[in-house]
Amino acid sequence: MVGRIGWQKDPELFAQVAELVTTKIDFTWVGDGDPAMKDRLLKAGVRVSGWISPEQVRRMVAASHLYVHTGAWEAAPISAIEAAALGTPVIARAIPAMSSLGYYTVNGSAQEIAESVDRFFTNANHRKFVLDKTEAVAQQHTVHEARRLLREAYDEAITTHLHRPGRRVERDSIEN
Image 1: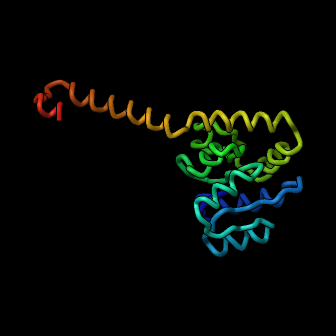
Image 2: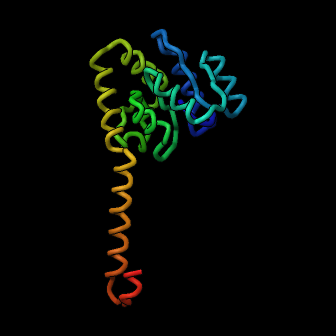
Image 3: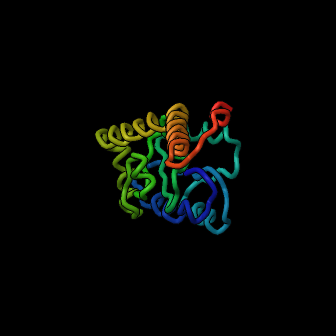
């Protein structure tokens, strides 16, 4: 998980997942934040990096075998999109934003997420499925695609505004 240790990222759920996973793997929270929540993560065996540079974050995420996203409420977390773009597979808590973006999601219980993490490391078919879903997200959410969609939205908004009934448009205002 990447980001500030706070309620929206649900560090308690992340700690529980770390405690329940049976596969021998290291869990890392990249970031820092609320001291009590940080302490809970540390007690669960999660390494907390503290605040590090964006380049260090990218290196850590790129070197990871899996990105587990436990956020409870977020619109479109940049950290998960960046993980996907770096080729790091993503398993995410099933919240509307993550599901709508196309990530592989698991219902919000720690046990179910932990089982999915274990399956990722022990079942080649499950690993391939998660990798394929993550790759699809990465291909959909590139800078080029975001620019294209934004341009389309602005073009549609401007066209709709300029051509609404009763609107008088001076030629000079269109050309400038």
